[in-house]
Image 1 (cartoon, rainbow over the protein chains, first blue to last red):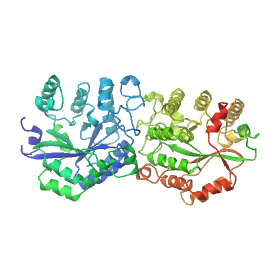
Image 2: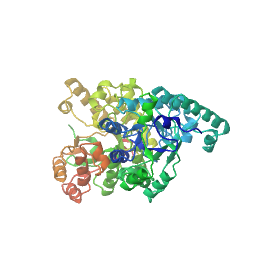
Image 3: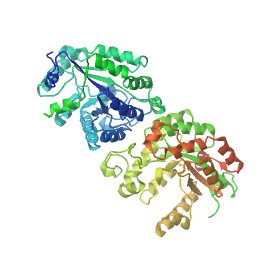
Image 4: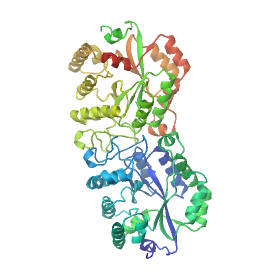
Length: 297
Length: 297
């Protein structure tokens, strides 16, 4: 692969390790939003994304209106994964959309929504989520995908079109055919994905060299785990995902992975980790500069 | 008014003071559901009702499945009153329903939903909420109305029909024309309401002599406040409303009346208040015996 042209335009060297440190699932619950506010104040996390169909999304929008410098995108959501704390589409309650499970919520898994949903209904829903975030006053800096649900031949074009139309960087890696095959795409789909992303990049869409995430089943020694993850970053632009949340009864009632979420919150508000990231020379940026680049600003 | 025939059928004397001590807003948030579980264990609260469109309703249903003796109804919901923690209808996202405000949620006030909503859409939504509660495994003992939104000539018949069809006691007072006028109904509507409720009672619908509620703006000395409220109960059947919730960051982020909700939780898990209610001879019942009476069981 040639070096990432987006990083070159932003003045980075091909050997630079550039990371967007990204808080997922903002607006999913109160505990996540409370943590995000602290993390943005602290300054190590550089971006995050809101789940518009979730109960705390309007509170997240109120936070964004009060903190317009915060770098916040839309975490486009087509799944509702927890046992009893659940949500559904904002654009429809029509069962023929294929977006609803037997409880009237999104399916729990990406595989299920990919198997059942009508691509046209998905495109309408994605657009509705972005429009509602904008209407609520969020200065949306990017779009990404909850649980990778749009990463499927049925839905991916709707996601890419939304990014192009609205001039918003999508969370999307720039991979060659071998890279896409390594993500379990079959040969034909991998060839198509490699061609598509190369064309999109030529059209000025900022793309990522890597996407990585701290695991949700290893709450112990989280600072050490994060340090190792930063140590292993290759050169190029990495979307680095964490799932921070405050330790509250709400969070613990929602999800068995609460301990890892609480650990993310603590690690990414620790001076030790912030100093470490600086000391190893990782350059932390947000999505806003990618968006501004895409918009010629 | 003649004495309440429902109480007579249940073996109470006309002078008995009978109360359904009712926890509202179950499933609205985690803090309310956690409190309800403790309150049912404690035994002073005798009933509660779930807000089906709210984020914690499926968790409430899981609680009900695990505690089938708990007396739980459906708190039929057409409003979403808080600033940023909000919800909407489960049956539609169609703006022509008149159920949605500019944020895509229910209106914040009963007046707004009464002014804008299509009565047919309301009837569908009420039925959908009840059906979803039943499908989720709640042994629904009654129906009532969040913020009194159905208490309007446009919607009241849908509510009463649902109660009659499903053989469920509704939260509905048995008042004469003067009683209805005292609730601010105009002369014509009051006459209609008095006639309607008398007919419904003749058809075997259990009705209430009084509905009362502890205020949400007086968190201090809550046990004393509750004692005075019980002291002032007249003879007959009273639906006695509280809004209990645990003291959590979630609750405090949702509502400015968190202190009164927390105070309800503490008062109604206090041996002092439980002993007092017993000592003054108030007979506490749930809705299940009214439902069973209505069903001839």
